[in-house]
Amino acid sequence: MTADFGLDREARAEGVRRIRAYFERERGEELGELAAGFILDFIAEEVAPLFYNAALGDAQALVARAADALDADLEALRRSPPRAVRQPPREPED
Image (cartoon, rainbow, N blue to C red):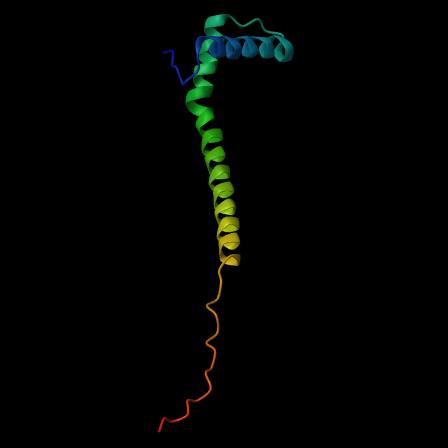
């Protein structure tokens, strides 16, 4: 089963090329394009969601920190109403 996962043709080909190169370099195995494509699909289906979810957690933490900083900045802009000026008592009119 070939899945898209948002990769265009060039990106998918690059992923397959990198998998083939890894197997050649690290294991001394020549991997065919079809096999490398299946490995890419497996990684995309089974492993990539772990990284994706971790990245979302990082993004959520970043947004929360930014919101806290913005909240603190906005709180620092608050102004107190002016103090009431006490008027001297009025003299009774005749």
